[in-house]
Picture: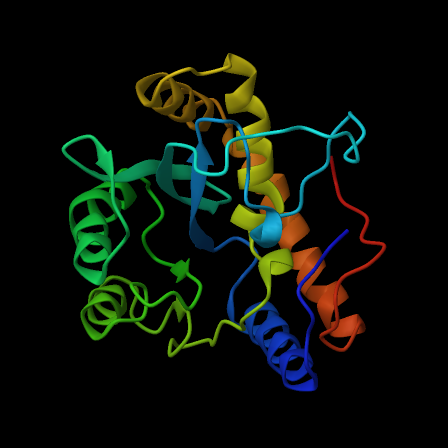
Amino acid sequence: MVAQELSVTDWKTRRTLSEDMLQHVPPKAASWCSDKAHFHLSGTAKKQNFRYWAENDPCDLHQRPLHSPRVTVWCAVSRLGVVGPYIFEEGGETVTVTSNQYCEMLENFLRPRLEEFDDSEDVWFQQDGGTAHTARRSLGILREMFPIRLISLRGDIGWPVRSPDLTPCDFFLWGYLKAEVYKHRPQTLKALKDPIREEVAAIPPEMTNIVMENCRERLRQCIANNGRHLSDVNFKT
């Protein structure tokens, strides 16, 4: 497995994050862990931000185009299920996510979707430190939506860099979802978007509940490893 190198400072921030989340975020809280990922029409995946397990030999050679059409997808995972997908596009064309587009998603997609869940008393939101995520307007909206319950760079609980092994979107959702989506062998972007929506909708809350329990186990393992990379983690199935 290839992972980003961690510094001594990273060890400390990862351990602090793990301790803070276990102390302040109750196991039964609705903790929405969010992220975005690219889905390429060629079926390739950028693997620096998620772990991927496959039945086939990962050393087999597969040739793919250097620049493949893609869609940018955002989702959030909690024990209640998956919110998403939200596809960042304008006029059917994929766009680079700016703070304005991110804020539009928060206001017009995430906010009404969360109102569909009957669990409004203890709701947390986690995101990484992307520029669009941590712009002043973005953080203002998130602090209003999740007062004293924002897990982010410059949030109520700080989110460390280089930590895809601690967030459910990276260690579970993207690898699982891409494996399912590419079984459809899409040939056009529309044929790629449709199974993304279908496969997200097919993920049951029972599965994400187990994922979130495993997430807390990862936090405990991170503390035991003093913030270093995780190893030998046993997961529920």
